[in-house]
Length: 252
Image 1 (tube, rainbow, N blue to C red):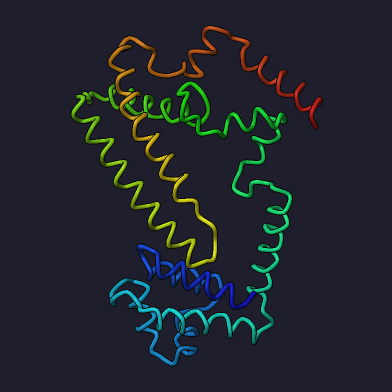
Image 2: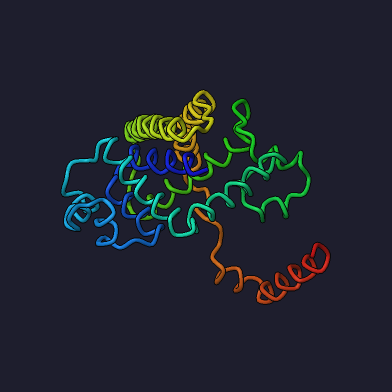
């Protein structure tokens, strides 16, 4: 576990856009002050400070390895509280993965949608049907952004939408490259093909959302505010509270 943790921390620092900030984050996780850490590395505290503030060039792999090993060795010499804590967390995640539970999913969503088939439909990319799954969700999100900007006086031309699509596509591919490197450094699986398929779909949906906005300029931009709902249905909040309480009695 100690070697795995060392590789994980080193990998995160190496691929980070702000290596100094990442170094500081891990130093604080290991409960070390700059002075204490400088003593471990046998350098002046100002050297540690310069790295963390970005005043020195990004550390090389040798420096990163020395940095990480010093923290991990110090923790091991003092009971291994941090390493053991992370080891326990890793064991929990591993156990969850054995039972095919999505670690990064929102628990509340699984509680609300008990039907596994329905859950799969919600999480499905739906490349061939823009009215389902993540494809529909992405279009709705883009339309919301466009409508919000429109209420602030911003006008969208088709050229601007194409530029937005190109900017998103390039930025998303760059992030995929970064996450692929992060995964490789930490020994994790990363499906680049699936991620790039999703990016291609979402970039196309930027244009679809824009076209829908042009075709339906009178479409209501947002759902009503709570103030308007309460004005139209004075007892709505009481009815909503009653419905939630009844659901809680049924499911809890």
